[in-house]
Length: 122
Image 1 (tube, one colour):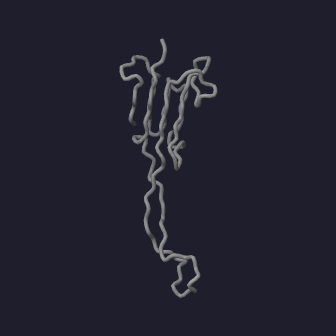
Image 2 (image 1 turned 135 degrees about the horizontal axis):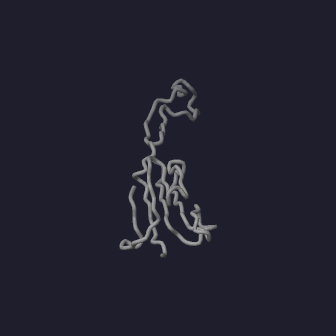
Image 3 (image 1 turned 45 degrees about the vertical axis):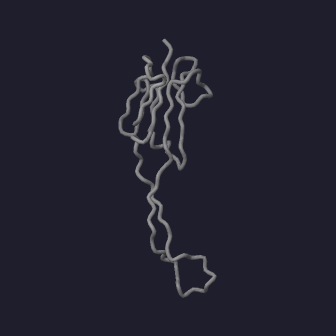
């Protein structure tokens, strides 16, 4: 996973650990399976501290940013296959094509994600 420190010369960032597809912040204070956040579009997950100092996902309850996780859009492999429903003998007005595109999702790869860490106060 690409990790970006904001600012680059910062000294105090939230501790995190990556185990397989799981990211854990602050010794398990907040942890989740990143692959479950993957969609057909880019997903940006904000990690904030709330008023008690606990970690929350999203900005609604958060008082300040500590991290942001960017999950790129799901990728697919596309393969052209023969259409078993296609009948060349059928009348001209059929909408069936002789082939179709089979889309299969590429397995999730946490290395394509980006973790942005913001320097914490104190």
